[in-house]
Image (cartoon, rainbow, N blue to C red):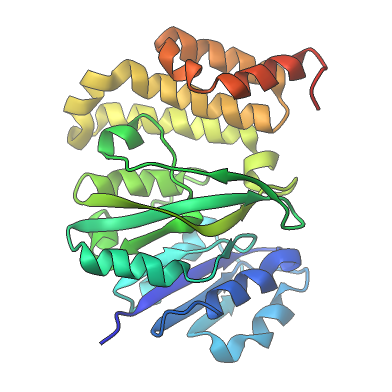
Length: 295
């Protein structure tokens, strides 16, 4: 019997992209799919798009909520799937993504979640770059090696054992969850492109660039306090904080906040220069931007 996978799309005022998101899920090759759209009461025409596909959805709702995490929680509480994933309403799957993820999980019962690569695209769907990841372990996630959320599929049992999505985070709620899953289960990487994530002016990664770094620092503090991470935190403390700073600096740079970005890169350098060396191209762009030589 084919395992059931549940996909939830949290949505709010993303009508420009929502139909492509929905179609990318419904057109997946997996034969046993449960798909839900949880809309936060959009007023931009999203409701008409959701209603257009209502017959293909296991459940949908459009009502005010408390944000992305709350929407995902509502969907997963209704989920029946053996495997779980969420796809934001401005991202989309590539053909065969879910089938590939399920095959990986089915053949590796020791894995709590699997992930592939992500295409970064602009608002028109034009490719910016491929976000390539690696086979990472818990220590790598603690050092803020970030996995692209649209290309993650979790085992339901791993999600529940980790305690589910936390409502305490709004920008790194995914990374916070991966960390907790990785304390209990192995995670697996497949070097295939499974999804596309949009980078546009209204996206959180651009519109709220500074908030990502702030939450990274909160997570680094949490790692220092949680007993599950205590031993590894002591061992990798400098690299953890360098990774948190580097992550925040990069988002500021991509948001064209070059002066603030350089200040945070300086903190990363003081914690562990080798971490900044890995980001030398972005540091160069940031320097040029600060001098007005890069737009």
